[in-house]
Amino acid sequence: MKRTTLLITLATVVLTTFSSYAQETALLSGKQYSFTETKVIPKMNKTSVRKGLMVFVAPDILTMDYSQPAGDYTHITSDSFEVSKNGKVQHFPMNNPNHRMAIFRTTLLYCLGGELDRAAELNHAGKACSVEKGKRICTLTVEKAAPRDIAQIQLLYDAQSKALISLTLTEGSGNYTVYNLTE
Image (tube, rainbow, N blue to C red; front, side, top):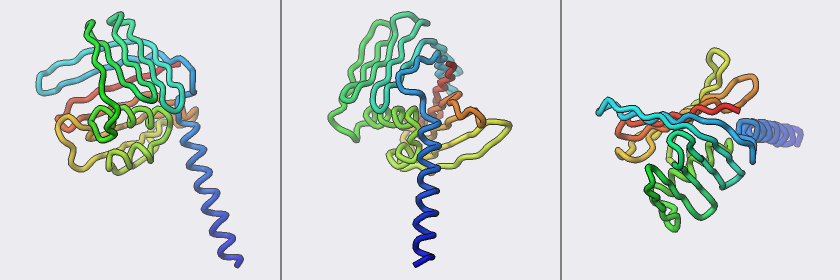
């Protein structure tokens, strides 16, 4: 009886600690963050940089309004995903949860919300976290990703404040996008 109680108590402490850490590593709901988005296409030796303001409202609203270039945006709600780039607006269907862009949308929301286990599960990815030079690095890796699908996600946190510093999404093709955040 004592052993069972001890195991249940230990499991509760571990789950509470991980849950607490996930909540602490999430962006603060409703807070505005400045961000820089750097998109790299190595095979073409091409890099583009965009800047703007991001607001994440847990669990499923994200607005990214770009100031450079002005007018571009990404808006995500519970049932929509809309991107405007160079004056062209794209609406991605969210009625099929297995659609590539629906998975991308949900993955992004999970990562910003501190739900890395759910992001890993959604993408059939392994998860590894480490601490190096005052930074906590969590990497989700997919073994076999199609060229346009997510192959790896890396989140970099300040180990002391637990604030998200950057999020890197790498596609199966090797193209990657880095989001650097500041408060």
